[in-house]
Length: 88
Image (tube, rainbow, N blue to C red; front, side, top):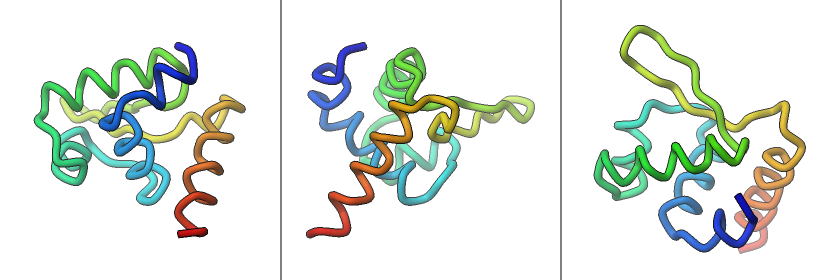
């Protein structure tokens, strides 16, 4: 996924900001904090995961999402979000 596609969606940017700030969360909590419904949040998380920016781990039926520390692009996006928020 191109950077334009990742950053062109307000929902995906909100999710990235939330995960950069909090660390890791389940899908319901991400949806609540982003002000999105479950289905839309799931679609954004799937796109972000396919791009390699985030990953999930599963505990039974619960999925916990976080930045993919093994992906240099994900770390760069996390730093961008953190720096952007610090300079408000």
